[in-house]
Length: 348
Image 1 (cartoon, rainbow, N blue to C red):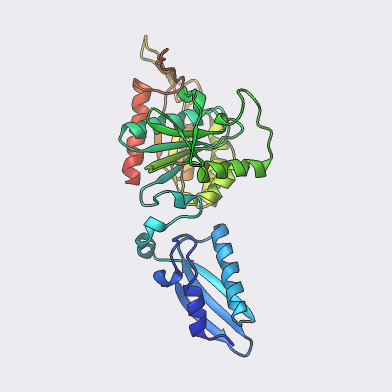
Image 2 (image 1 turned 60 degrees about the vertical axis):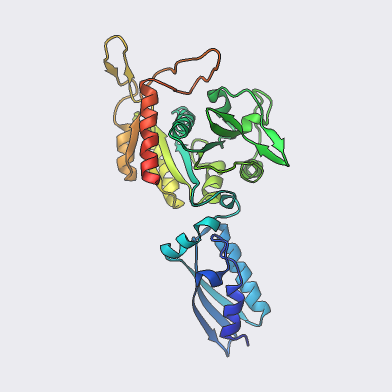
């Protein structure tokens, strides 16, 4: 029968799947019990993050190793390591997608909405530009694979380059961008099922040379479909911003996206209310075209702050350097900059 010493030696040699160091370095074995007459081994193991495919893979690996060493049956319980222990290994922390980034530095922010047409992509693009203006290194993954729009919004006409078998993102306004729009012919519909979408999303992480980023923003598809769920599973450390309009229906539907974030243990940074009002340049009067209060009500329902209320208005177009959805100056630009500053204060 396998001994406790052998059990500890086997398990301690296995890597914590999130911290990417041997369990011996995290003191991750909390308890070992052996019932000799039944050949049963019972363990409690502490790891860097609970849930997900990583925990399941670790469980299968440990059970198989212990059975190969002589155990008849294995019982495993998991709990999370203390925060101070996790912080010791931040530099190596991350699953196969996260570990390409410096987890002490790079912060993932997913921008979500309950429905299309509320300006989620516009919010993503302008927050990215403002974070870059404030001195941060920023990337965008246009994960809205059916409704990709980030390249057009930012006025990107060039294509990514390939270097050493890696895709080099296109840079615009100092922001690195990757999108499905770079890989399909103009106005060609993407007619794919879920698994193919997942593979494309995986490529955006594993085959792209992102370099050293402070923030990676993900423009999610509206709603709670396959791609949004894939992102939640791939990036458990990602935080989330929910975009809505003031209209009660938009806010009601956006609550589902918020509920998905909560259900998958993703922290919601706050709500951005877009198209909050239209202010007349002639009179200064504010017209609440889509009603009032939807963003505040949603923020209260999700128990998160209302990060900002963005009014309606066109950006100032530069015919020589056209970017139809980027607000580089003016009142709306200032609103986005305030939200970006608030995010930096909260995250740093």
